[in-house]
Length: 461
Ligand code: AMP
Image (cartoon, rainbow, N blue to C red; front, side, top):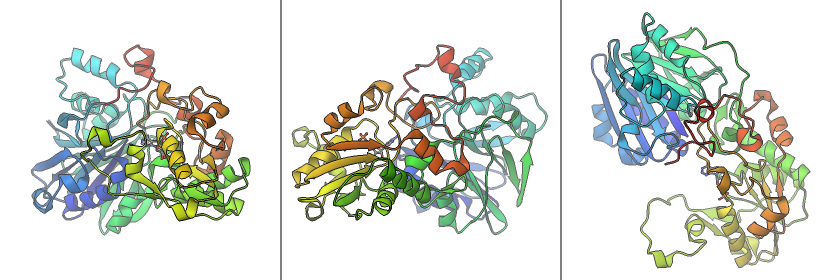
Protein backbone atom coordinates (compact mmCIF):
# COMPACT_ATOMS: atom_id res chain seq x y z
CA UNK A 1 0.00 0.00 0.00
CA UNK A 2 1.17 3.52 -0.60
CA UNK A 3 0.29 7.16 -0.25
CA UNK A 4 0.46 9.59 -3.16
CA UNK A 5 0.25 13.34 -3.67
CA UNK A 6 0.38 15.75 -6.59
CA UNK A 7 0.79 19.53 -6.31
CA UNK A 8 0.01 21.93 -9.16
CA UNK A 9 0.45 25.69 -9.22
CA UNK A 10 1.56 26.19 -5.61
CA UNK A 11 4.88 27.84 -4.73
CA UNK A 12 7.46 25.54 -3.16
CA UNK A 13 5.43 22.58 -4.30
CA UNK A 14 7.99 20.10 -2.92
CA UNK A 15 7.50 21.48 0.59
CA UNK A 16 3.75 21.07 0.22
CA UNK A 17 4.24 17.51 -1.03
CA UNK A 18 6.52 16.82 1.96
CA UNK A 19 3.86 17.96 4.42
CA UNK A 20 1.17 15.94 2.66
CA UNK A 21 3.41 12.86 2.72
CA UNK A 22 4.05 13.44 6.40
CA UNK A 23 0.28 13.19 6.92
CA UNK A 24 0.13 10.07 4.71
CA UNK A 25 3.04 8.34 6.45
CA UNK A 26 0.75 5.61 7.84
CA UNK A 27 0.21 4.42 4.22
CA UNK A 28 3.87 3.48 3.75
CA UNK A 29 6.98 3.63 5.88
CA UNK A 30 9.56 1.89 3.69
CA UNK A 31 10.58 4.68 1.36
CA UNK A 32 9.64 8.16 0.20
CA UNK A 33 10.30 10.35 -2.81
CA UNK A 34 9.44 13.70 -4.35
CA UNK A 35 9.93 14.94 -7.91
CA UNK A 36 9.53 18.69 -8.54
CA UNK A 37 9.42 20.63 -11.80
CA UNK A 38 10.32 24.32 -12.13
CA UNK A 39 9.26 24.90 -15.74
CA UNK A 40 12.51 23.74 -17.28
CA UNK A 41 14.13 21.14 -15.08
CA UNK A 42 12.77 18.34 -12.94
CA UNK A 43 14.65 17.29 -9.82
CA UNK A 44 14.05 14.35 -7.57
CA UNK A 45 15.04 13.11 -4.17
CA UNK A 46 14.18 9.63 -2.91
CA UNK A 47 15.33 7.30 -0.22
CA UNK A 48 14.48 4.48 2.12
CA UNK A 49 12.86 5.27 5.43
CA UNK A 50 10.30 7.69 6.85
CA UNK A 51 9.55 11.04 5.22
CA UNK A 52 11.33 12.82 8.08
CA UNK A 53 14.41 10.62 7.56
CA UNK A 54 14.57 10.93 3.78
CA UNK A 55 14.22 14.75 3.52
CA UNK A 56 15.80 17.70 5.26
CA UNK A 57 15.67 21.46 4.69
CA UNK A 58 18.48 21.31 2.14
CA UNK A 59 17.14 18.43 0.04
CA UNK A 60 13.73 20.10 0.00
CA UNK A 61 15.02 23.54 -0.99
CA UNK A 62 16.81 21.96 -3.97
CA UNK A 63 13.48 20.67 -5.28
CA UNK A 64 12.36 23.92 -6.88
CA UNK A 65 9.18 24.69 -8.75
CA UNK A 66 5.43 24.85 -8.37
CA UNK A 67 4.70 21.32 -9.56
CA UNK A 68 5.53 18.24 -7.49
CA UNK A 69 4.63 14.59 -7.20
CA UNK A 70 5.27 12.61 -4.01
CA UNK A 71 5.01 9.02 -2.83
CA UNK A 72 5.31 7.06 0.40
CA UNK A 73 5.94 3.39 -0.18
CA UNK A 74 4.86 0.21 1.50
CA UNK A 75 6.12 -2.37 -0.92
CA UNK A 76 3.72 -4.94 -2.28
CA UNK A 77 4.64 -5.58 -5.92
CA UNK A 78 8.37 -5.16 -6.48
CA UNK A 79 11.12 -5.29 -3.88
CA UNK A 80 12.54 -2.60 -1.64
CA UNK A 81 15.25 -1.86 -4.17
CA UNK A 82 16.01 1.87 -4.67
CA UNK A 83 15.03 1.51 -8.35
CA UNK A 84 11.50 0.73 -7.13
CA UNK A 85 11.21 3.83 -4.96
CA UNK A 86 8.67 6.20 -6.47
CA UNK A 87 7.94 8.58 -8.08
CA UNK A 88 9.30 6.75 -11.09
CA UNK A 89 10.89 9.16 -13.54
CA UNK A 90 11.48 9.11 -17.26
CA UNK A 91 12.44 11.56 -19.95
CA UNK A 92 10.39 11.04 -23.07
CA UNK A 93 9.53 12.95 -26.22
CA UNK A 94 6.86 15.06 -24.49
CA UNK A 95 8.90 16.09 -21.46
CA UNK A 96 9.95 14.88 -18.03
CA UNK A 97 7.58 12.43 -16.48
CA UNK A 98 7.14 11.58 -12.78
CA UNK A 99 4.71 8.91 -11.64
CA UNK A 100 3.34 7.89 -8.23
CA UNK A 101 1.06 4.87 -8.01
CA UNK A 102 -1.05 3.42 -5.23
CA UNK A 103 -2.55 -0.03 -5.74
CA UNK A 104 -1.49 -3.22 -7.44
CA UNK A 105 -1.88 -4.04 -11.12
CA UNK A 106 -3.15 -7.56 -11.70
CA UNK A 107 -1.76 -7.79 -15.25
CA UNK A 108 1.66 -6.20 -14.85
CA UNK A 109 3.67 -9.40 -15.49
CA UNK A 110 1.72 -9.96 -18.67
CA UNK A 111 2.26 -6.32 -19.73
CA UNK A 112 5.92 -6.51 -18.80
CA UNK A 113 6.49 -9.65 -20.88
CA UNK A 114 4.91 -7.97 -23.89
CA UNK A 115 6.89 -4.75 -23.37
CA UNK A 116 10.16 -6.68 -23.13
CA UNK A 117 9.28 -8.57 -26.29
CA UNK A 118 8.81 -5.16 -27.94
CA UNK A 119 12.30 -4.12 -26.86
CA UNK A 120 11.58 -2.14 -23.68
CA UNK A 121 14.37 -2.02 -21.10
CA UNK A 122 12.80 -2.47 -17.69
CA UNK A 123 14.69 -0.87 -14.81
CA UNK A 124 12.67 -1.82 -11.77
CA UNK A 125 10.52 -4.66 -10.54
CA UNK A 126 7.71 -2.21 -9.68
CA UNK A 127 4.39 -2.93 -11.38
CA UNK A 128 4.01 0.82 -12.06
CA UNK A 129 6.90 0.89 -14.53
CA UNK A 130 4.69 -0.71 -17.16
CA UNK A 131 2.59 2.46 -17.22
CA UNK A 132 5.62 4.66 -17.95
CA UNK A 133 6.52 2.47 -20.95
CA UNK A 134 2.94 2.34 -22.18
CA UNK A 135 2.71 6.15 -22.16
CA UNK A 136 6.04 6.58 -23.94
CA UNK A 137 5.22 4.09 -26.69
CA UNK A 138 1.57 5.02 -27.20
CA UNK A 139 0.88 5.94 -30.81
CA UNK A 140 -1.95 8.28 -29.83
CA UNK A 141 -1.60 11.96 -30.60
CA UNK A 142 -0.72 14.30 -27.72
CA UNK A 143 0.11 13.58 -24.09
CA UNK A 144 -3.52 13.53 -22.90
CA UNK A 145 -4.38 10.82 -25.39
CA UNK A 146 -1.20 8.88 -24.65
CA UNK A 147 -1.92 8.90 -20.91
CA UNK A 148 -5.50 7.86 -21.48
CA UNK A 149 -4.45 5.11 -23.90
CA UNK A 150 -1.78 3.77 -21.53
CA UNK A 151 -4.17 3.70 -18.55
CA UNK A 152 -6.71 1.73 -20.55
CA UNK A 153 -4.28 -1.22 -20.76
CA UNK A 154 -4.01 -1.58 -16.99
CA UNK A 155 -6.03 -4.09 -14.99
CA UNK A 156 -6.42 -4.13 -11.23
CA UNK A 157 -6.07 -1.32 -8.73
CA UNK A 158 -4.48 2.01 -9.51
CA UNK A 159 -4.77 5.48 -8.21
CA UNK A 160 -2.13 7.47 -10.00
CA UNK A 161 -0.69 10.97 -9.80
CA UNK A 162 1.67 11.96 -12.55
CA UNK A 163 3.40 15.03 -13.92
CA UNK A 164 4.46 15.46 -17.53
CA UNK A 165 6.33 18.74 -17.68
CA UNK A 166 4.13 21.19 -15.80
CA UNK A 167 0.90 19.23 -16.35
CA UNK A 168 -0.38 17.08 -13.50
CA UNK A 169 -2.60 14.07 -14.22
CA UNK A 170 -4.63 12.22 -11.62
CA UNK A 171 -6.41 8.98 -12.42
CA UNK A 172 -8.37 6.26 -10.73
CA UNK A 173 -9.03 2.73 -12.03
CA UNK A 174 -12.54 1.95 -13.35
CA UNK A 175 -13.56 0.19 -10.13
CA UNK A 176 -12.15 2.86 -7.82
CA UNK A 177 -10.28 0.50 -5.48
CA UNK A 178 -8.05 3.15 -3.90
CA UNK A 179 -9.05 6.60 -2.69
CA UNK A 180 -7.96 9.87 -4.29
CA UNK A 181 -9.22 13.34 -3.46
CA UNK A 182 -8.87 16.69 -5.23
CA UNK A 183 -8.28 19.85 -3.20
CA UNK A 184 -7.70 23.52 -3.88
CA UNK A 185 -5.28 25.88 -2.23
CA UNK A 186 -5.33 29.48 -3.47
CA UNK A 187 -5.03 29.30 -7.26
CA UNK A 188 -3.36 25.88 -7.11
CA UNK A 189 -4.47 22.29 -6.64
CA UNK A 190 -3.59 19.25 -4.58
CA UNK A 191 -4.47 15.61 -5.26
CA UNK A 192 -3.86 13.13 -2.46
CA UNK A 193 -4.78 9.68 -1.19
CA UNK A 194 -6.66 10.97 1.86
CA UNK A 195 -8.16 14.20 3.12
CA UNK A 196 -5.75 14.33 6.08
CA UNK A 197 -3.14 15.43 3.51
CA UNK A 198 -5.35 18.35 2.44
CA UNK A 199 -5.93 19.33 6.07
CA UNK A 200 -2.24 19.70 6.85
CA UNK A 201 -1.84 22.02 3.84
CA UNK A 202 -4.90 24.10 4.67
CA UNK A 203 -6.32 23.04 1.28
CA UNK A 204 -10.05 22.98 0.68
CA UNK A 205 -11.62 19.68 -0.39
CA UNK A 206 -13.14 19.94 -3.88
CA UNK A 207 -14.21 16.33 -4.51
CA UNK A 208 -13.26 12.66 -4.58
CA UNK A 209 -12.15 11.21 -7.87
CA UNK A 210 -14.70 8.93 -9.40
CA UNK A 211 -13.85 5.42 -10.57
CA UNK A 212 -12.37 5.55 -14.06
CA UNK A 213 -11.82 9.29 -13.95
CA UNK A 214 -8.74 10.98 -15.44
CA UNK A 215 -8.09 14.64 -14.56
CA UNK A 216 -5.62 17.03 -16.14
CA UNK A 217 -4.55 19.94 -13.94
CA UNK A 218 -2.63 22.91 -15.25
CA UNK A 219 -2.43 26.65 -14.56
CA UNK A 220 -5.24 26.54 -12.04
CA UNK A 221 -7.59 24.65 -14.37
CA UNK A 222 -8.91 21.15 -13.78
CA UNK A 223 -10.23 19.31 -16.83
CA UNK A 224 -11.78 15.91 -16.96
CA UNK A 225 -10.39 13.78 -19.78
CA UNK A 226 -12.40 10.96 -21.27
CA UNK A 227 -13.21 8.42 -18.56
CA UNK A 228 -11.45 5.07 -18.75
CA UNK A 229 -13.37 2.28 -20.45
CA UNK A 230 -17.08 1.66 -19.97
CA UNK A 231 -18.20 1.87 -16.36
CA UNK A 232 -17.33 -1.16 -14.23
CA UNK A 233 -19.07 -2.16 -11.02
CA UNK A 234 -17.54 0.05 -8.35
CA UNK A 235 -15.37 -1.74 -5.83
CA UNK A 236 -13.71 0.61 -3.34
CA UNK A 237 -11.58 -1.39 -0.89
CA UNK A 238 -13.46 -1.78 2.38
CA UNK A 239 -10.19 -2.60 4.17
CA UNK A 240 -9.26 1.09 3.75
CA UNK A 241 -12.17 1.87 6.07
CA UNK A 242 -11.47 -1.07 8.39
CA UNK A 243 -7.76 -0.48 8.94
CA UNK A 244 -5.73 1.41 6.43
CA UNK A 245 -6.91 5.01 6.26
CA UNK A 246 -6.53 7.50 9.10
CA UNK A 247 -9.65 8.02 11.23
CA UNK A 248 -9.50 11.80 10.72
CA UNK A 249 -9.75 11.29 6.94
CA UNK A 250 -12.79 11.09 4.72
CA UNK A 251 -12.55 8.70 1.81
CA UNK A 252 -15.25 8.34 -0.87
CA UNK A 253 -17.29 10.76 1.22
CA UNK A 254 -17.24 8.51 4.28
CA UNK A 255 -15.71 9.59 7.58
CA UNK A 256 -13.28 6.83 8.54
CA UNK A 257 -13.93 7.44 12.25
CA UNK A 258 -17.72 7.21 11.74
CA UNK A 259 -17.31 4.03 9.68
CA UNK A 260 -15.25 2.33 12.39
CA UNK A 261 -17.63 3.44 15.13
CA UNK A 262 -20.50 2.00 13.10
CA UNK A 263 -18.55 -1.28 12.78
CA UNK A 264 -18.06 -1.28 16.56
CA UNK A 265 -21.74 -0.63 17.24
CA UNK A 266 -22.81 -3.43 14.89
CA UNK A 267 -20.26 -5.70 16.52
CA UNK A 268 -21.72 -4.97 19.97
CA UNK A 269 -25.18 -5.93 18.68
CA UNK A 270 -23.94 -9.06 16.93
CA UNK A 271 -21.67 -10.24 19.77
CA UNK A 272 -22.77 -8.85 23.13
CA UNK A 273 -21.01 -9.89 26.32
CA UNK A 274 -21.20 -9.11 30.03
CA UNK A 275 -18.00 -7.25 30.90
CA UNK A 276 -16.51 -4.40 32.96
CA UNK A 277 -14.38 -2.57 30.40
CA UNK A 278 -13.95 -2.17 26.64
CA UNK A 279 -10.36 -1.61 25.57
CA UNK A 280 -8.94 -0.98 22.12
CA UNK A 281 -5.82 -2.25 20.43
CA UNK A 282 -4.49 1.25 19.78
CA UNK A 283 -4.59 3.16 17.53
CA UNK A 284 -6.31 1.53 14.59
CA UNK A 285 -9.12 0.03 16.71
CA UNK A 286 -9.86 3.09 18.89
CA UNK A 287 -12.91 4.17 16.92
CA UNK A 288 -14.36 0.65 16.68
CA UNK A 289 -13.87 0.13 20.43
CA UNK A 290 -15.61 3.45 21.15
CA UNK A 291 -18.52 2.27 18.99
CA UNK A 292 -18.68 -1.01 20.89
CA UNK A 293 -18.65 0.86 24.20
CA UNK A 294 -21.35 3.36 23.10
CA UNK A 295 -23.68 0.60 21.96
CA UNK A 296 -23.10 -1.81 24.87
CA UNK A 297 -22.90 0.77 27.65
CA UNK A 298 -19.70 -0.89 28.90
CA UNK A 299 -17.16 1.87 29.74
CA UNK A 300 -14.29 2.48 27.34
CA UNK A 301 -10.96 2.36 29.19
CA UNK A 302 -7.37 2.99 28.18
CA UNK A 303 -6.18 -0.49 29.00
CA UNK A 304 -3.39 -0.80 26.45
CA UNK A 305 -0.81 1.80 25.57
CA UNK A 306 1.07 1.91 22.34
CA UNK A 307 4.62 3.17 21.99
CA UNK A 308 4.66 5.48 18.96
CA UNK A 309 8.41 5.60 18.71
CA UNK A 310 9.06 1.98 17.81
CA UNK A 311 11.44 1.94 14.89
CA UNK A 312 14.46 -0.06 13.91
CA UNK A 313 16.17 -1.21 17.03
CA UNK A 314 19.00 -3.48 17.94
CA UNK A 315 18.02 -6.27 20.30
CA UNK A 316 20.12 -9.17 21.48
CA UNK A 317 18.44 -12.40 20.34
CA UNK A 318 18.49 -13.79 23.90
CA UNK A 319 16.39 -10.81 25.07
CA UNK A 320 13.62 -11.84 22.76
CA UNK A 321 10.81 -14.10 23.90
CA UNK A 322 7.62 -15.04 22.13
CA UNK A 323 5.80 -11.82 23.13
CA UNK A 324 8.74 -9.49 22.76
CA UNK A 325 7.69 -8.01 19.41
CA UNK A 326 4.25 -7.12 20.75
CA UNK A 327 5.66 -5.87 24.07
CA UNK A 328 7.93 -3.46 22.23
CA UNK A 329 4.77 -1.89 20.85
CA UNK A 330 2.06 -2.38 23.50
CA UNK A 331 1.87 -2.42 27.29
CA UNK A 332 -1.23 -3.01 29.45
CA UNK A 333 -2.31 -0.65 32.23
CA UNK A 334 -2.56 -2.95 35.25
CA UNK A 335 -4.90 -0.65 37.22
CA UNK A 336 -7.45 -0.78 34.39
CA UNK A 337 -7.28 -4.51 33.75
CA UNK A 338 -6.62 -6.23 37.11
CA UNK A 339 -9.62 -8.28 38.24
CA UNK A 340 -11.78 -7.05 35.33
CA UNK A 341 -13.70 -8.82 32.62
CA UNK A 342 -12.40 -7.05 29.54
CA UNK A 343 -13.62 -6.80 25.97
CA UNK A 344 -10.62 -6.14 23.76
CA UNK A 345 -11.51 -4.75 20.32
CA UNK A 346 -9.25 -4.89 17.28
CA UNK A 347 -10.04 -3.71 13.76
CA UNK A 348 -8.94 -6.96 12.10
CA UNK A 349 -7.34 -10.30 12.81
CA UNK A 350 -4.67 -11.29 10.30
CA UNK A 351 -2.05 -13.76 11.51
CA UNK A 352 -3.25 -13.70 15.09
CA UNK A 353 0.27 -13.38 16.45
CA UNK A 354 -0.07 -9.88 17.94
CA UNK A 355 -3.48 -10.73 19.31
CA UNK A 356 -2.24 -13.87 21.05
CA UNK A 357 0.53 -11.87 22.71
CA UNK A 358 -1.89 -9.16 23.80
CA UNK A 359 -4.18 -11.72 25.43
CA UNK A 360 -1.25 -13.17 27.39
CA UNK A 361 -0.23 -9.67 28.49
CA UNK A 362 -3.76 -8.89 29.71
CA UNK A 363 -3.94 -12.14 31.68
CA UNK A 364 -0.50 -11.48 33.15
CA UNK A 365 -1.77 -8.23 34.72
CA UNK A 366 -4.83 -9.93 36.20
CA UNK A 367 -7.66 -9.84 33.62
CA UNK A 368 -10.46 -12.04 34.99
CA UNK A 369 -11.91 -12.71 31.50
CA UNK A 370 -10.75 -11.71 28.02
CA UNK A 371 -13.35 -11.40 25.25
CA UNK A 372 -11.92 -10.58 21.82
CA UNK A 373 -14.09 -8.67 19.38
CA UNK A 374 -13.04 -7.90 15.80
CA UNK A 375 -14.44 -4.96 13.81
CA UNK A 376 -14.40 -6.91 10.53
CA UNK A 377 -15.01 -10.50 9.31
CA UNK A 378 -12.25 -13.15 9.24
CA UNK A 379 -9.49 -12.28 6.76
CA UNK A 380 -9.39 -15.41 4.59
CA UNK A 381 -7.95 -14.48 1.21
CA UNK A 382 -4.89 -12.69 -0.14
CA UNK A 383 -5.19 -9.18 -1.55
CA UNK A 384 -4.13 -8.69 -5.18
CA UNK A 385 -5.10 -5.02 -5.21
CA UNK A 386 -2.43 -3.47 -3.01
CA UNK A 387 -2.93 -4.35 0.66
CA UNK A 388 0.12 -6.16 1.98
CA UNK A 389 -1.40 -9.34 3.43
CA UNK A 390 0.27 -12.62 4.32
CA UNK A 391 -0.33 -15.67 2.17
CA UNK A 392 -3.47 -17.70 2.81
CA UNK A 393 -1.59 -20.32 4.82
CA UNK A 394 -0.55 -17.69 7.36
CA UNK A 395 -4.02 -16.22 7.87
CA UNK A 396 -5.48 -17.43 11.16
CA UNK A 397 -9.06 -16.99 9.89
CA UNK A 398 -8.52 -18.85 6.60
CA UNK A 399 -9.77 -22.28 7.57
CA UNK A 400 -10.17 -22.50 11.34
CA UNK A 401 -13.49 -22.61 13.19
CA UNK A 402 -14.20 -19.88 15.75
CA UNK A 403 -13.66 -22.32 18.62
CA UNK A 404 -10.24 -23.25 17.22
CA UNK A 405 -9.24 -19.59 16.91
CA UNK A 406 -10.49 -18.96 20.47
CA UNK A 407 -8.21 -21.75 21.68
CA UNK A 408 -5.23 -20.43 19.70
CA UNK A 409 -5.67 -16.91 21.06
CA UNK A 410 -6.42 -18.14 24.58
CA UNK A 411 -9.59 -16.04 24.94
CA UNK A 412 -12.85 -16.66 26.77
CA UNK A 413 -14.79 -15.72 23.65
CA UNK A 414 -14.24 -14.35 20.16
CA UNK A 415 -16.67 -12.50 17.89
CA UNK A 416 -16.16 -11.16 14.38
CA UNK A 417 -18.34 -8.57 12.69
CA UNK A 418 -20.35 -10.24 9.92
CA UNK A 419 -19.73 -9.38 6.25
CA UNK A 420 -23.32 -8.08 5.91
CA UNK A 421 -22.97 -6.09 9.13
CA UNK A 422 -19.81 -4.46 7.85
CA UNK A 423 -21.06 -3.56 4.38
CA UNK A 424 -24.45 -2.37 5.65
CA UNK A 425 -22.77 -0.09 8.19
CA UNK A 426 -21.13 1.90 5.37
CA UNK A 427 -23.62 1.24 2.58
CA UNK A 428 -23.47 4.84 1.30
CA UNK A 429 -20.17 4.30 -0.59
CA UNK A 430 -20.71 0.66 -1.59
CA UNK A 431 -20.74 -1.86 -3.10
CA UNK A 432 -17.18 -2.57 -1.98
CA UNK A 433 -14.31 -4.89 -2.77
CA UNK A 434 -14.45 -7.41 0.08
CA UNK A 435 -12.06 -9.91 -1.52
CA UNK A 436 -9.87 -10.47 1.56
CA UNK A 437 -13.01 -11.47 3.50
CA UNK A 438 -15.15 -13.08 0.81
CA UNK A 439 -12.71 -14.38 -1.82
CA UNK A 440 -14.72 -12.53 -4.50
CA UNK A 441 -12.25 -10.63 -6.66
CA UNK A 442 -13.93 -7.83 -8.63
CA UNK A 443 -11.09 -7.22 -11.14
CA UNK A 444 -9.68 -10.13 -13.13
CA UNK A 445 -6.43 -11.61 -11.78
CA UNK A 446 -4.83 -11.72 -15.22
CA UNK A 447 -1.30 -12.72 -14.15
CA UNK A 448 -2.65 -15.50 -11.91
CA UNK A 449 -4.98 -16.76 -14.65
CA UNK A 450 -2.08 -16.86 -17.11
CA UNK A 451 0.10 -18.76 -14.64
CA UNK A 452 2.54 -15.83 -14.34
CA UNK A 453 1.80 -15.11 -10.66
CA UNK A 454 1.07 -17.23 -7.64
CA UNK A 455 -2.56 -17.61 -6.51
CA UNK A 456 -1.13 -17.43 -2.94
CA UNK A 457 -0.87 -13.64 -3.31
CA UNK A 458 1.38 -11.01 -4.92
CA UNK A 459 5.12 -11.49 -4.60
CA UNK A 460 6.05 -10.28 -1.15
CA UNK A 461 9.20 -8.42 -0.29
P1 AMP B 1 -2.43 -10.14 14.24
O1 AMP B 1 -2.89 -10.24 15.65
O2 AMP B 1 -1.02 -10.60 14.12
O3 AMP B 1 -3.38 -10.79 13.31
O4 AMP B 1 -2.37 -8.59 13.87
C1 AMP B 1 -3.55 -7.89 13.68
C2 AMP B 1 -3.20 -6.42 13.65
O5 AMP B 1 -2.53 -6.08 12.45
C3 AMP B 1 -4.44 -5.59 13.73
O6 AMP B 1 -4.28 -4.80 14.90
C4 AMP B 1 -4.44 -4.70 12.52
O7 AMP B 1 -4.62 -3.38 12.96
C5 AMP B 1 -3.07 -4.87 11.91
N1 AMP B 1 -3.13 -5.05 10.45
C6 AMP B 1 -4.16 -5.43 9.69
N2 AMP B 1 -3.83 -5.50 8.38
C7 AMP B 1 -2.55 -5.16 8.30
C8 AMP B 1 -1.63 -5.03 7.22
N3 AMP B 1 -2.00 -5.28 5.97
N4 AMP B 1 -0.35 -4.64 7.52
C9 AMP B 1 0.01 -4.40 8.79
N5 AMP B 1 -0.81 -4.50 9.84
C10 AMP B 1 -2.08 -4.88 9.62
